[in-house]
Length: 312
Image (tube, rainbow, N blue to C red; front, side, top):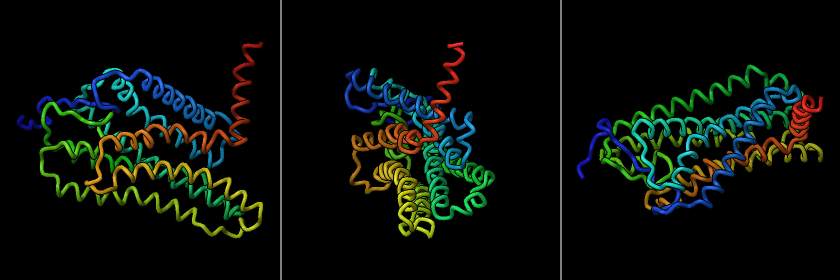
C-alpha cells in the first residue's frame, strides 16, 4: 500500500491493550474500576485542598495539583482503552490521535516536575524546619507549578508538531491503546533519523532533569534537623512514601522510552504504559495524601458537613 500523507483523511486503528479481535469484559470491568477509583480519590483530594483550611500548607498545595494532573492524565487514555477492550480496532482520526499525544506528553511531563517540586518542599521541611516558612513561600510554590506546566507544554508541542509532519500509510494499525510517541515513530514512512536523535536528546534532558532534582533534594545524608531519632523518623515518614511514587513513575517511563530498539516489545510497552499511565496515578493519593491525619480529618469534616443538612 502506498503511503498517504496525514493531511489526506488519515485514520489510525488502535488495536488496544490485548492483541486479537475478541472482547475482554472482565478486563474491561477491572480497568473501569481502577479508573473510577482514580477519579474518586484524586478529585476528592482536589476538593479537600481547595475547601479545607487545614490543608493550606505548601505540601498539600502541590498534592492538590498532582491529583488534578493525575485524573487528567488517565482520562486522556483510559476511555479509549476501555472502548478497545469491548470493541478492538477502534478508529481514531489524525487530529484526535495527535491531540491525545499532545496532552499525554504535557500531563506526563508536568507530573515529573511536580514530583521534583514536592521533593524540594519535603526536603526543606525536614532539613530546614526553622527557615521553611521563608524558603517555601506561596509565591515560590505557585512559580514552581507554573514552570512545570510551561516546560511540559512547550516540550509536548515540539514533539507533537514534529511527528504530525511525517507521512503514514493509511489506514495504519497501532499496536497500542493510545497514540504513543514511540509507536508513531515506528509507523511513519518518512526519514526520521535526524528527528529521532533530536527527540531522544531533548527527551533525555526533560525526563532526567526532574529525576536528578528529586535525588538532589532527597540525597542520602540528612541535615542537622534530622539527626535526632525523632528527626530520622520524620524524614523517613515524609520522604519514604514520596520516593515510592517517584520510583514507580520514573521506573516505568524509563523502561519504555530509554532502552535499545533491539529490546522493543509491543506487549511489554503496553503493560508498562498501564503502570505509569493508569496504576501510578491511581496509587498516588493513597501513597502521598490519604494516609495523612490532616487529610483524614478534612475528609471526616467534609462528610459531616454533607450529612448535617440531611439530618436537619
